[in-house]
Structures are given as structure tokens and as C-alpha cells.
Amino acid sequence: MVRYVSIFSVAVIFSSVAGQAFAAESCTAAKRKAVCDKEVVQKHVETACALVEKKGKDAIPEIEKTRFDCCGDSDYIWLNTYNDAEKPVMIMHPVKKALNGKDISGNKDPDGKALFVEFVKAVKVNPKGAWVDYKWTKLGETEPTPKTSWVKKCAVGKSGDFWVVGSGTWKE
Image (cartoon, rainbow, N blue to C red):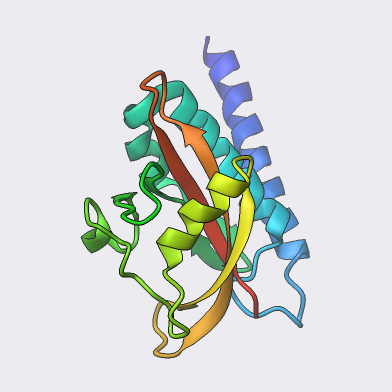
């Protein structure tokens, strides 16, 4: 049993290091901190969606702790309701926890785009996933920066309900 655990631990560590190496290789001088390849963001949303589909609401704590490297900065996944496009509610935002449980229909970027309303609309048209462009303020900065997020419609276990699962990356 000890040997199995050790081999498993080495495999997990190797996988983690390989993932960081891939993220580091995709970070070029032309990319600023926290710019991820879109495929990296999509992969993490797909993984979170599979977890929501398998565990339902019990997936929230695990997804809330999930972070992945984007050129030296930590990225995350959020969950919001799907059913009412005009009144989405934040299920879980791991960084802006004050949003959790709140109506987020009024959250707009500087151009007036209702972000979470647009996320719901996007997955109603493309349930398998869609990119949505908007502006968001980076942690520690004061001016909004162009961002894009991959959002996907995901079944919440066997409840018959659906959530929007999403994550984003900076465009510059």
C-alpha cells in the first residue's frame, strides 16, 4: 500500500509540474501576467462542469478551492444560475465572495455590458460553451482591462437544474 501511495504521489507531482511547465511555455514576452491560452481555460471549465454534473451542489467546495496558473497568476472558476437570463444569481465566486447568493444582473462593465446576463444568454444559444468578451478590473489595478471568459451550461447532478460554469483570461 505504501508503494502504491508513493507512486501515486510521484504521478500527481509530475502532472502538476508538467502542467506548470506547459503554462510557462505558453507565456511569451508579448503576453502580460495572467494571460492564459484559451485551451487552458476551456479545459478547467470542462473539468469543473464534469464535477458539477457528477456531484451536484457537493462540488462547490472543491471548485471554490480550484486555482490554475495563468502566466504566473492564479485563475479560478465561478458558478452562477442559468434558468433566468434576466436575473442570474451568483452561486459561488471564489475571489469576490460578496457576490455569492446575490442577484448579479446589474454587474456591468464600463461599456454597460451586463456580464452575467450575457454569460447566461451565451450558453442558452451555445450550451456546449461560448466565449464572451467584456472588461474587468485586475486584482490590484484600478482600470478595467479587456477580458474573455469561457462559459458552459452544466447540469447540477440529477437535480434537473443547470448552472453556468465559467472562467476567463485577460486579452492583453
